[in-house]
Amino acid sequence: MKKLLIISTILIVGGTLLLSFRTEPVKVDNPLRLAKDSVGSAKAFMSVYKVLMSARCMNCHPAGDVPLQGDDNHLHTMNVKRGADGHGVYAVRCSNCHQAENATGLHMPPGNPKWGLPPANMRMVFQGRTPRQLALQLLDPKQNGGRTKQQLIDHMAKDDLVGWAWHPGDGRTLPPMSRTAFVAQVRLWIAKGAYAPSAKAK
Image (cartoon, rainbow, N blue to C red):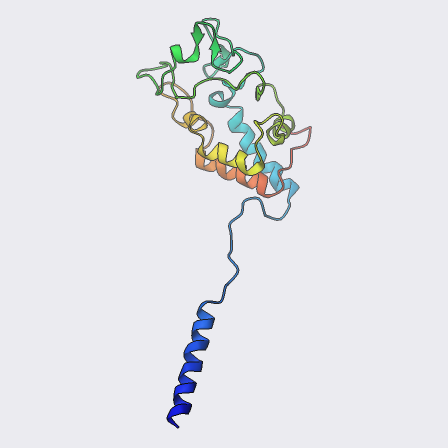
């Protein structure tokens, strides 16, 4: 009887241990795996587009090789040019005026350690792009710095130069939504299929 009781106890304990080590499927919140939804995806991008068309973003993504300034997107004064690396040419380098942080005071030079335009071989133009054109450009590794969709999300969410747009210094208008809301729309756009809006979208 004692032996039977011991055996039963061993079986119960062993079974319990086996159950405790059983692996369960892990649920991962993957922003790239939602049901495809062309309408919802394009709608999310239209929110993204409004931010990218704001002065805080577009001024550093001009159609030409001269950066833009101000909420009215006027050409940068002092004959500033992009240069091959995006940080100016000859003695007129971005870092001459733009330091690691915003200078104190109204409309003083903004700052960031990486201040500059995209390089000449990867210009990433926002100015003048329609929603469809910009969406397709952002998704093209040949035009977006070789980024995958996930890397594009990470760039929008974590890059400190992108984040500067929400901390631009005194006298500058912020983008039309918070960075958190903006990144959420980027994720939604991609998660629902990364669809480009129609050519008629504005």
